[in-house]
Length: 313
Image 1 (cartoon, helix red, strand yellow):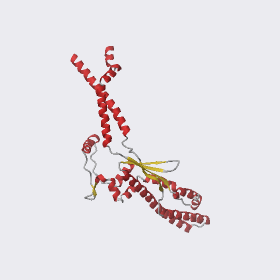
Image 2: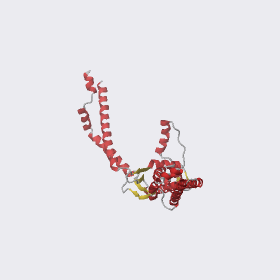
Image 3: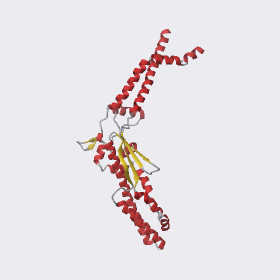
Image 4: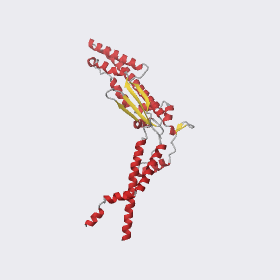
């Protein structure tokens, strides 16, 4: 019984001896995987990171404080003030990846054609389903077998697809100390990424401006109706100040220039490619080659040992 247990136990010295005997094979496999990693880096598409830094406009930064001083008057007049600048800045972040803003981007046909260049047919002036590669055909055949899902029909570029692309590729981060917002995107076409981010900022800001003007005009009309019915002097004074404030805000919103945010820095492009990471790919290739080579050596030894046992029996 003890002999069987000893046979089943792994002899570390025998293991290391087997690896040492197969060091040439391990070296060859490691070099092959390492060279494959190097070849991949030579053909891989280089991606750069493009970033834009934004800050709230001065009007938006001061709007919250100005309205805060009228909170008591609004309560006295029996109305509720509209949201302040800080809320508009938060809304800006939330709307960046929305379908509403994505649909506005589709007004720029040139930009959309550049974004979905692989699907644009210049001769027909329309989007067509691209011809899948060999790997794509294999995936289409295997996926239904593994997941049970049918093959999805082709959907031409639309607001939903663009919003999905923005959700996957656009990174948004806010510095809590400075209040600045940084948008970043990694792309093999940094110029296209820069144009997309600038258009996205412009359309999101324009969307919020239009929405604010509509809601502000409705609020102003409401205040004017209230003041015509107000009987007490305090109510009329409070409503008059609210009307003056709302008119000032509408005047600032309808003027030319950014409404919620303005560009502080950028678009800036990284000096070196950020993907693929050459050092990481080569390091992984080296480690994978060592493990693969060791596995081949041990498998050969195990198969050789089994053959000896069979011949002896």
